[in-house]
Amino acid sequence: MKLNTRKLQLLFLTTVLAVTFTACEDNENVDSTDQELALSAESDFEEQYMDLDQVIYDAFDINGMGPDNGRVVATDKDQTTLKCAQVTWEHNTETGEGFFSIDFGTDGCVGPYGRVRKGIVNISYTGRYWETGSVITTTVDQYYVNDVKVEGTRVVENITDGAVPTFKISLTGGKLIFQDGKVATRTSTRYRIYDFNNLEMKIYGTAEGVNRLGTSYNIQASSETPVVFVKGCQPNGKYFPVSGIKTISRVRANNEMKDFVVDYGQGECDSKVFINADNWSGEITIN
Image 1 (cartoon, rainbow, N blue to C red):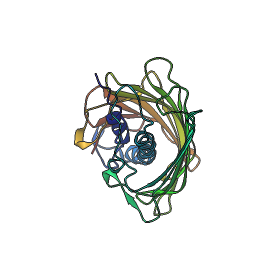
Image 2: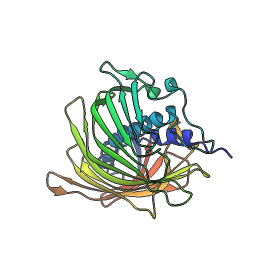
Image 3: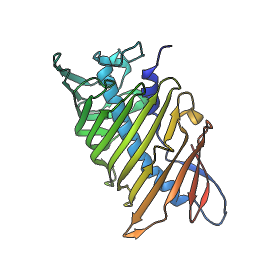
Image 4: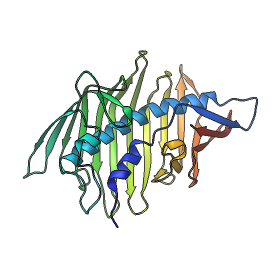
């Protein structure tokens, strides 16, 4: 059986929460606006850094540094996020170490999904992405996606111990600067597990920072109940988690807010999540 790494990469890129929601409330006198806004703000970071992941995947793939064992990868630069970028590659064949500099220019480079990128992405590595023990460090220079400036250092460590590819992903100095001047920050440590046999990805870990609403937050997803994505689940044309739980804690203007739990269900392929909070519980449909 051919293990389709490429499709799983694209699945990960498109696991982005939309910013518009509809709710089915348990109590018609209490609305879910607060939770909706928090999830929308959370999706900002998911979108931008998943997009950066795809740039990393494509840089390795088109330069013959993708996975072995017949897995499907990108070979045509024009079919990737790097379509109109200038890619400089330096590689030491003796040590396996190397460096990519990906320059999207200053005028705007339109790639897949209509995303417009500007600026430079620098990637240094100690081995292939899918090689156990490799460390991949990504920094950016005046980098924008759809006019949102993206900052931060992202380190991906391949910590696979066995047959299941496992990665530790750390983000420091994460920052998004929006056109209206609002700023969001993030530091995170997450773990990503690929199950190629079932075409699943499991994600768990922690994240903290300040969202564009000015609210400090902390997000926890445990290894016992990771957020799970599967290939082929595309309600509304987007991929969504089919299971998993994460807890969001927040502080706004020095006032601690109520925690709320986001439950993605028990394996159903839909775009519904269940929110459980002290002041409101109910189902939200992600459009």
